[in-house]
Length: 107
Length: 136
Image (cartoon, rainbow over all chains, first blue to last red):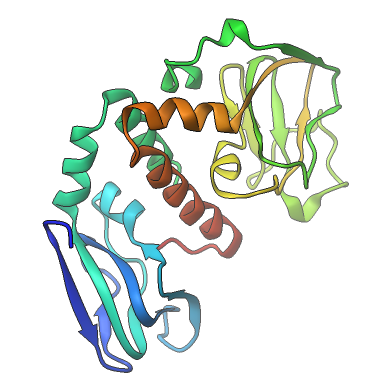
C-alpha cells in the first residue's frame, strides 16, 4: 500500500464523511459500495463500487464534501491523504501538474 | 491559450481544417480518438437537452459551452469517454487542429505514468457530475 494511505472498514450504513466536512482525503473502494446521498439523506445520487476512485476534485480544490457518503454493506476502502496527491503532483513535470490542476479547475 | 497546457506538442506539424459557419466540428457519437484545438474562430457546444433547437449564431445559453480561439474542444469528454457526448458547432468560420489521443497519451507517459490516468479520472468525475449535477 502506498505511503499516506490506509485501509478503512465500514459497517452497513456507517458514514464515511458528512456534508460540510473538509475534503482532506480521497478514496478507492476495495469491496462493498459507497452511496452518496442527497441533501435529505434519503436517495442515493451515486454509487461507487470496487475499483472506483472518488474525491480527487474536492481534495484538489481543498473544498468541502457536498454530500454525505455511507457504506452499503460491509465496505473496505483505501483512504489516501491529500498530501499524497499533492506530493505526486509536485513530483510530476510542471506541465503535467499544471494540466491536471487545470482539469480539476473545470469542476 | 490552452494549447500551452500541452507544450510538448508542436501544433505546427498537425493538419488544420477549415470549418464553415454553422457546421459541426464534433458530432455527438464521434469517437474521442481526436482532440481538437480551436485555433481561430468561435464555437459552441449547445446543451444536449436542446439539441436541434439551437442555432449556432444564437447567444450561448447558461448551460451551453462557448469556446474561443485557443480552447480545446470538449477536453473533458475526450479524456473520459469513448465517444463525444455533445455536438460542437462553428459559430463562425473556424480553423481547428486535430491531434490523435494516443499520440498525446504516449507523450505524457514518457515523463510520468500517473499524469494521464489521473487526468482521465478527474475528467470522468467532472463529466459524471455534469450529467447528474453531482460532484464526487
